[in-house]
Amino acid sequence: MRFDTRLVQLGQEPDRQYGDVVAAIHVSATFERRVQDPLAYFYGRGENPTREALERCLAALEDARFATAFSSGQAAATAVLSLLSPGQRLIASDDVYGGTYSLFTRLARYGISVDYVDLTDLGSLDAAVRDDVAMLWVETPTNPLFKVADLDRVCAYVRGRGIRVVVDNTVAGPALQQPLSLGADVSLYSTTKSIAGHSDVIGGALVYHDEELHNEFRSYRTVAGNVPGAFDCFLVHRGLKTLTLRTERQVGNAGRLVETLRSCDRAGKIHYPGLADHPQHAVAARQMRAPGSVFSFEYLGDPEKLLGRVRLYACAVSLGGVRSLIECPAVMTHAPIPRRTRLRLGISDNLIRVSAGIEDPADLAEDLRTAMEDR
Ligand SMILES: Cc1ncc(COP(=O)(O)O)c(C=O)c1O
Image (cartoon, rainbow, N blue to C red; front, side):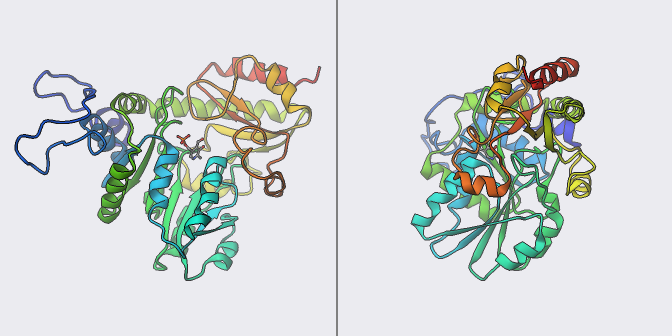
């Protein structure tokens, strides 16, 4: 069964009793167990049939053996971080999502160190790897600068060194990039983004092959309690069915908007892996099916005024949904990063990030072009 068929059908097998062609929403918090059967459902903080239906589909997205759904992308991240022990070190992409950065700042109190490395440069990775490194956290493309790490080479480099590779695949999404097939141990998703796709639910997921990891993630989730509710699982699963259709349209719209910006004299540097002059254009072309639906650019004017002038873009954080969004990372998504660090990384005060939705491309282009004009 190919990707698009799995999206629509897995976890949605017709119900034997009533014939439903959509997985039912099971809201029960507890399950009757007169006979002690270890396989039966027990309590909603453990397993739930609606969640399991979603997980069957999520695992199939990357041809993985397992997937575990969480109440948010950040909850999925905490489950991964729970694998680390005091004295161990984590290496992470140097411009990870601001919320990830904030989460990492809390690791020091558990005796875990974090090194930030430009993972587009294998030399920097080589210089950072030591015996205490237990995990490599790759975000690619990074957000908001859209740097692309060569997953094949990065995974090959750490193989055999006892380092687990976790790839935050939220920005590309599984329709465009498949980290497990390139050697990653775990793919992490904020399903809030392109997977659910309608900006109406918060969710997260981990996708992986290893059974030992599976037992760890499931038992962590049960005791930590960061489970997604049945209705949220239903929404994520419903959105998932149209992932490819939405992604194709969004990538097309992003390309059109980037072209529009190239002819605007108020647009400075544009960060988008689809551009031939992007430093990792060739890597992106090899490892991604398309360059993505999100991009950023330097606005040569007052960002606040630009955000106030757009009419069709919601000025909001998040990405990957059907509605187009615009934001200024310095004061929104990446505000938790200290200004000096942020500027060193290239996230300037006037960087603007756009997540292209599925609206008519001509409307989106016209609105952005008009808003870019300085009045
Ligand atoms: C790349 C990336 N990873 C993780 C997250 C966290 O996901 P959530 O908001 O679902 O917790 C986000 C949210 O914006 C993100 O952009």
